[in-house]
Length: 282
Ligand SMILES: [Zn+2]
Image (cartoon, rainbow, N blue to C red):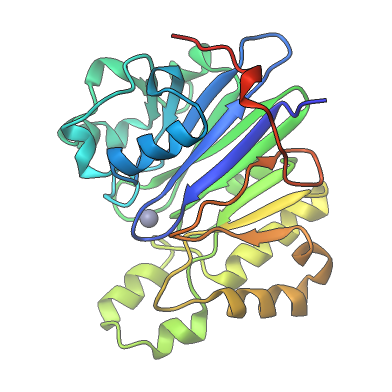
């Protein structure tokens, strides 16, 4: 039995973010999706090749926002995803065109916009992050759902409701409050990060996960975008084991340098899903 959704997070952090999501809807063809393009073309296409996925097989690319760690500048010189639609909120379209993404490939992810008609399995939500904001994604099919929330300054009630019911929650856990406050960063930067329009702290991510888990059990949690300066794997583990020991058992941490194994959404373990099951869409 193969899972309807699986995800492989290739990299997460301020130096670059990207993930591959593969869907196998019962009523439609298999589909490969990318979440952010924060790696260079060489690195990302290399990672796809390892998975035996051709760039022309990518059906959709979801862009959370257009910062360089989510949209690498190298794509302006190399655009191999000729069959893909790029889904992003209109607030980011200008920056995306400047980054070299063909405007003709872009779909509007604003509420009631056109992307829903092309990709009914993908839902989008505006999240607070700097001036243009970020976008959260919920990908669901055949009774399972994946939530993706990174680069957001706060988790509103609307965002909690949007992600409630997912089986796998991938959520930013950027900084430890004390490490941030004691860091040598200038005050304006600390304020930008912690002021509600920057990044989620470890405690905020844990609180959000507990709330969502309380509505319906989470089977996987992946913490994203850990700060290399104001956070660490051990700090996160200590927090979760102290305050949510049961949830800590299904939590893992994405890193900047090492791709996580494929995660099968809705199933308890990592999966070994044969690539031969995918038929090329090109
Ligand atoms: Zn970022």
